[in-house]
Length: 357
Image (cartoon, rainbow, N blue to C red; front, side, top):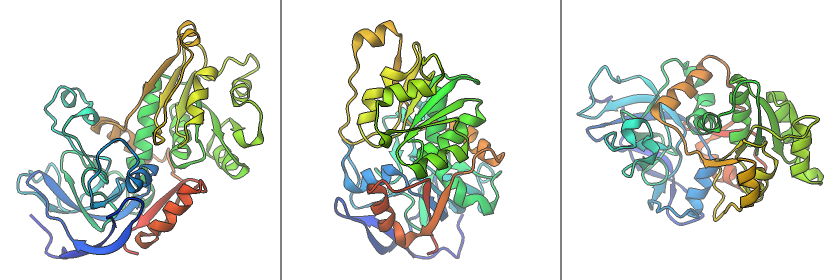
């Protein structure tokens, strides 16, 4: 089933060589039997998209590639095997990082779809959302029926940034009333993480650099702000921010795109606390003092996107008005400028592309 108004060609930002994107006209894809075709109205821009362009992760990337994995739009065609009613023409949906998985392996059946060996990744192993029309597995698209059409721009970052930090907070085990330090709190993920943490009843210590980011973090609900650019020992500053006893926060979410903060977190997290690794700086490693990690019973773990259930929960927070991602909307043609700002570390909040411009 399809919409007769679907064009044959569309505009897209395409990676043909590492480190470069090109705005060009490409064919509109056709959905396979299990896919839907989505007319994209907006797409968020994630730091992962910069890694995809630079091809600096130890993960094989499709080339040429249409990047992007935070797309929000409407279904305009159904694959021949998609049952009408499970998803219908005109439904508002989102395309996220996990484009598809087998849904039959040991990981998929227990809700760990992101660990599926046959998972397809939007904007990395398959074409993503920096185009006006994109395909995705009908069983994996995010259902946005409770999100108004006027909110499709601000919901776009929830499909990766929001989902990723929400899952990380769940993985941290932090309980309502406890403290979480969010490192990289002024960036795209961090600005949303603060809000999810607050909505989940957690007290936030925001860690980032610069006055502008500090002001943004406090407006979003952080109780304390640690500015690493002011000098001094970050470990001691975070401990001090946690209270007069300096025990440290119960959990740490690492969202910074640099390696340095990953080496510090285990030193200031509270004993029996959890450090959650989320950002993936290219080539970064984590080094821990074994004795201190053992006797303080510190847990260090990774958290990687989220399941279909996590997605539904993350979107529900947004639909209830608890998450308002601070966004700047620019045209699809402006993606190169967005990457320049991102590389320079000047992005506060999240850029969202208007696919009509």
